[in-house]
Length: 448
Image 1 (cartoon, rainbow, N blue to C red):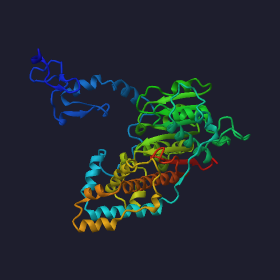
Image 2 (image 1 turned 135 degrees about the vertical axis):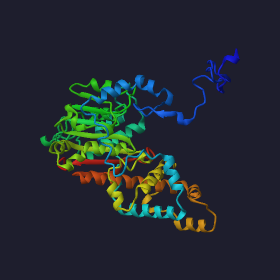
Image 3 (image 1 turned 180 degrees about the horizontal axis):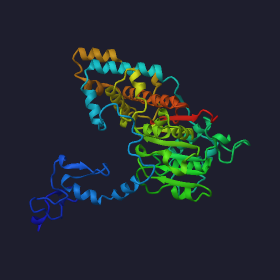
Image 4 (image 1 turned 180 degrees about the vertical axis):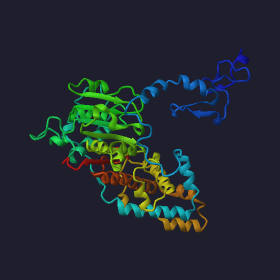
């Protein structure tokens, strides 16, 4: 009987696979050894792969085919509209492995020069980032768990969401009706020309940042932008609110023409996002601040003016790509090349590797002992950058990672400022709650 079974051993079950083998193999179709080259990304959705030999039949029955066809017919779908202009021929994303290999291929002298440049740039550009951990009174119902018990509650996420909203309130974008007779019933800028009717949450996931905003401040319309499908979403709870209109847009931010969303046209809105991973922050900034405005499109300039405020909690800087980054000119003017930018993005992963149970020292007061590194390299104690990295203290790596994160986010802040917004970059929670604690704030100049 066992002779007719697949010869693939299942260690957890302590037996061979029970499936029948293929005619020309000792293994079944699931376990037949294949080279990596035989698997290629699905052209409909690259998040999964298929066998090259099965590609033709797969594209006809891929579960995401119907969704992709439906999306392509939507007026707000425009492939790659927010990807950024290509300065060179189109290139694939640079993976973390490629970034690491590029760093390790440097000489120790080149590595030390790059670190010197990062520290110099950080000292000159990242002076105005301060801690701003807020617990607004308007969010007490969530802080004290006076909400529907069916809603998921995790203290660290509630603290982050509350601080995002508290910083928006402190920045003058939204207003709490608590203790203020002048605040409008919706909780937003009360000037008629700046009254915010809608909220667009990018990378919304299940939508619980918007849920807290709806519970604590209130507004008319909600747009949740998310490319994936989630269970246990806040949608059901949001739809139960009277006079609130909810619209979920299942689309990649890269392909979203926000100006073509009919129900959002000519409506002042607030853009928010909690932990927009890597290039998603850059895509969101372009989505809200159409670069077509610079080309003289009056309609797009008018739609840009509808953005009254923005709050983006950035994260996963190690996924950032030069081709998507909003402010490449900022980096180039500082003498940072594309290769050095990708090296910096790889360094950012060190910021979240450290122990954050206690706060790190002030990174402005920390610097690497580069002279000792070069001396050890000259004496033969270190052989290449890989040895240098291995011998760095965890706190040194974390500090370097945080400096790179701040430089990347300052560039984004400057880009938004160049597009006519008042901007701030703050640390909205302690690193003990989340080391991914940068919040980019922006507002329309008249939203005061």
